[in-house]
Length: 167
Image (cartoon, rainbow, N blue to C red; front, side):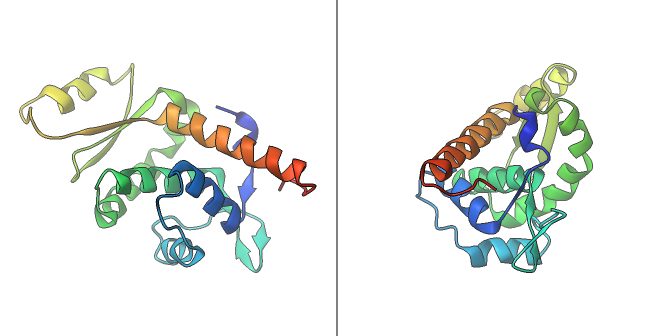
């Protein structure tokens, strides 16, 4: 994880570019959709600085949006993500401490975030317990964060090469 990005803030256009790169350009990600997610408190903008009169997105906001779009691509409805996001927000301090050791699990109804070492028994229970055979998605948060960091770095290199100043 690139620690320098934790304090960064991003405009909606920058977030849009990262999400388009993450989804390979297959997902329609308009600024109106990002504004809707922010307005309905699904992923509000929590940055401290403004861009065009609106708060910028924090790095945390960007990671949450990336999870949302990954889960949407896997077939998880946005409303189910919306229900799980409050739980996820409560656990964010744990993410900041060791984000690369966290695993996000969902069966399409419930959303869990577990430490891959300290809570490995609970992860095993979700995957092999009483409801064995239930379809479960497991996301290694560390690899998603590494991918996001790589995309941000690539975009910054393009901006510098084009003579623009990286934000």
